[in-house]
Image 1 (spheres, protein in one colour):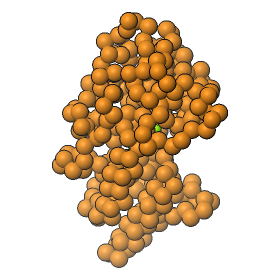
Image 2 (cartoon, rainbow, N blue to C red; image 1 turned 90 degrees about the horizontal axis):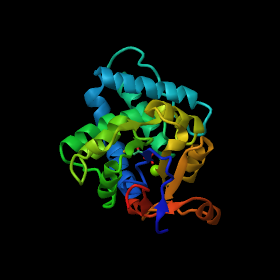
Image 3 (cartoon, rainbow, N blue to C red; image 1 turned 90 degrees about the vertical axis):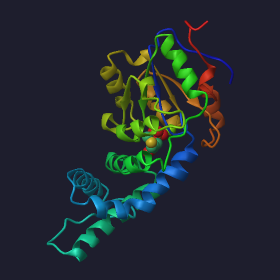
Amino acid sequence: MGVLPVPAEVRAILLDIEGTTTPIAFVQETLFPYIKDNVKEYLRAHWEEEECQRDVGLLRKQAQEDSNLDGAVPIPLESGSGEEELERVIQAVVDNVHWQMSLDRKTTALKQLQGHMWRAAYATGHVKGEIFEDVVPAIRKWREAGMKVYIYSSGSVEAQKLLFGYSTEGDILELFDGHFDTKIGPKVESESYRRIAASIGCATNNILFLTDVPREANAAEEADTHVAVVVRPGNAGLTDDEKSYYSLISSFTELFLPSST
Ligand SMILES: CSCCC(=O)C(=O)COP(=O)(O)O
Ligand SMILES: [Mg+2]
């Protein structure tokens, strides 16, 4: 690791969050436990709201798709009324959320609910989005050099905006030209990167994608997107093959833009 020249054709930098802009520990030890500890209470408090019913509907649909998976938790429809029936369905949703989270699943259904739940955690100051210290100064420099900067995370767009809107560096949402989540497709499928390029209005090779996950880098590369794998404290280790195959950076300051001499 040292200096990584950015290819001249690159016009946009696409950033992963967990393990790239943000420590994995913040997601795993702060954000996810908040969901596990509060999901039941949240569902009880918001059950009658349209947004909560939409989230439950998406989770129920996902549960049907998952029915052949080991340990999958079905979510029944409410049959009739009464406290006991409501508690039965809510408990099924809670168990489903816990099961999905135990596998670190990235389903849109789970991520939508999480995004809605974190709203209160950020707004009350209970949680602040953690950002590695090199991130903000580097993005400012890239933008001064004319680069567009986008986020692509499995976390919902709403969750992304909360993390960067209520971050340890203040509200830094102005640094981003747009956000993508799994609604555009999974991060491990190359088609997702083609869709992102089409949405930005550029070719896939005009994009440089920074991620900590080799499977995501591989999918992006298959779509002819430039990639670099980010090595941060607490990230999963890379194999020797991955280390020698991918361009690696440990800080955003290692990217060298041709126009930033
Ligand atoms: C956007 S905050 C929560 C992050 C999250 O839920 C997640 O699954 C992280 O995925 P990423 O694609 O950013 O590695
Ligand atoms: Mg990541």
